[in-house]
Length: 254
Ligand SMILES: [Zn+2]
Figure 1 (cartoon, helix red, strand yellow):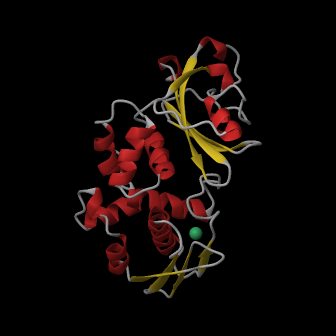
Figure 2 (cartoon, helix red, strand yellow; figure 1 turned 45 degrees about the vertical axis):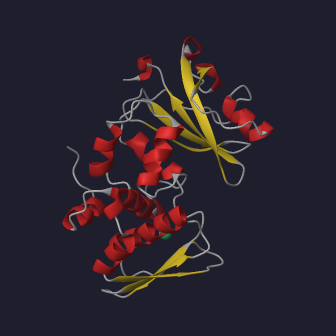
């Protein structure tokens, strides 16, 4: 049993036992924060607060999952960085490329725990046979979360031997690895043109319906990795980026 995080303690305190019960505006209200939605030009969300009361404004132009994550992110600032006035830009909210010590990542971690709490998601993942995009999309829908945030949590929860890696056309932007994996499975700095992911990013190939096998040396650089195969499946992100789920062989489990 993993200890509850601050966000999970809030949910437990409210008796929340299903993803559909995670009403973020109601939760904000119980924390003394009022939520507004209006078009914002240069940021995703802001929080202005005194010691006890806060006003959170979320960009009404953003899509629903993004607005939800932004609101949870601001509640993370309200929990961790009370009394500060903050403007969170598009690259601050839900950006897994930020360092773990960055306050924006702290707010993101809080948001991830509020929207995809371990105590609900772990039992849910036990019903997932294969970590496909279809399975992740089903969960994302149940939790009103983005596919990226869902896959990130699925990886961190260590249920499957997977790595998720985000690339743009020149380099790897970030990746996350299931803790069960050997640390030398470290995805390459830039996308190998032999991968299906590169075919999608550079040649506009369509998304695959199922993960496909690929020699591991298209993704990894350590000596001897050419003995293995991995399974890859990717989807497109905005701004010419791609996110790939790599399922590693049993031999990669530490
Ligand atoms: Zn922020």
